[in-house]
Structure formats: C-alpha cells, structure tokens
Length: 193
Ligand code: AMP
Image (cartoon, rainbow, N blue to C red; front, side, top):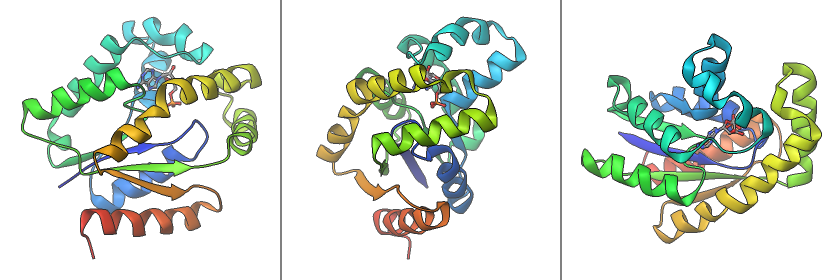
C-alpha cells in the first residue's frame, strides 16, 4: 500500500521515472498533464476547456483539476496505492488532496522530489520539443512553466518536508542512475527492504 507524489520542475524526468516506480510498486502512475493531453487529442469538452491554458504554460483552474483527480482516485485501481505526477501543483491543490484522502481514511506515505538545475532542464525540454513536438515546449512557454513552478509548486517541497514526508533525490544523470537513487530513497521511506 503506497501513496506517493513525485515533485520536480518540468523536464526533471518525472514522467519517465514515474513509470518505473509505478511498475515496481504495482500502482498506477497518474499524471494530470497526460489526462489533459489525452482529452485535448480526443477533442473532448474537457480537452477544449484546457487546450489554451496548457498551451500557454499556465495552470488549469484548481476546481477543474481537483475534480479530475478526485474522480481518478476513486477508481478501483487506485485503491491500493498510486503515484501522482504533476499534481498537486499549488498549496490549494495540496489541501484539496488532503480532503479527498481523509474522506476515505487514506493518507500519503511519501513525497519524492527530483532536484535538478533549472537551466539544465530548460535545455532538456527544448530538446524534447524537437522530438515530441509538444506545443508547450517552446522556449517562451518553457520559461513561463518554470516561473509558475518556482512561484506555485516549489513551496510544496517545504510543506511536505514539515510533515516528514519529503525525500529529495538528485535528478541529474542517466535515467538508470536516477532510478537507482529513487529506489533506494523510496525503499528506505516505505520500509521495503
Ligand atoms: P505536465 O505534463 O505535468 O507538465 O502538465 C502539462 C500542463 O498541464 C501544465 O503546464 C498545466 O497547464 C496543466 N496541468 C497539469 N497538471 C496540472 C495541475 N495539477 N494543475 C493545473 N494545471 C495542470
């Protein structure tokens, strides 16, 4: 039973590492960014609603985002644990998540933060833009997403540290190297040998 959050700026490698962690712990990786992108691609009403804001690198309104997460967390596969990637992203969402979990007697086990150098990840994101063609990976939008992270999401690190849930891991290096560091940190935090 493991309920986790992965924190870190855009381009820190959260998505890649989240898949590995989720597989290892047998829990679903839930990415709000992926949910929004899937809806935009499928042309759903939700997709239409979030298209512009995600393309500009701003945050989708909390009310909408919280509702989507509450719905996702109520599904059967999330009852035995989950890994949230890209949520919560501000202190209001932290509170909303607390409310969702406590309503069913659940609580978080660990918050993992991937620590990276901002300039390094900006370069990483611009490279990813060439490969994946994401509309929110232009330099201007990338810089805006970094600012939004610094202003709204970075404070979450201290908030979870105060609760004793935070584990910081150096996110710099090859995917496998970072994965090894993550596994060590999570095994220690969750009491897995
Ligand atoms: P990501 O793939 O996590 O970088 O998310 C891509 C975009 O989706 C973000 O830049 C936001 O516009 C939107 N988004 C994802 N997660 C959230 C969230 N928790 N709150 C608000 N907006 C979000």
